[in-house]
Image (cartoon, rainbow, N blue to C red):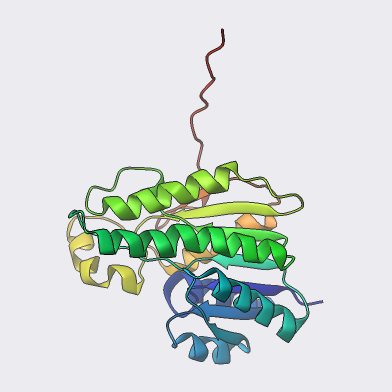
Length: 231
């Protein structure tokens, strides 16, 4: 029986690459996105598009329900939707939007996926979730929160992992692409992240974060172990 895969933020970039990768392997794919261009991607791969604002729990639940209604089940969920560009000013409107999409969207997506019977969940975090990012501190804070959640949350019979991309050739970095290259920084193709997402799903492990950078194979991030002091 074909796998059923739900990808949030699947209208472009990483999400679209993941959707296409699983579709090529015979999966039925549901794309959930606020960007209506997701309808064209879904049509291209023979999938389903569900307009979805991931910052709202009900819309996450509706996307999961649509997947189950259309294809009878739900196996894999890639929570990829995200936003950034908070800048360095303490702009509370930008802060609230970034946290609503990135952090609330992750929690709501996990909750809906588990209720919908998914057996594997992968969240798109970022290298900004494991290292300082001075040019966008609120984005970094949101991605650090995602990493903390993924590494800490245990869900019976469900694997939960994160991918941590560096600079990826997506609309999110369109304005900075040439500057990055001028500084000698490599920009990866979204397909490289899609490979890492599949590895996280197929590996059978949980609570891991996978680093993804241009020209390098995906690698599990090794975090330091801290032992609590005892009396």
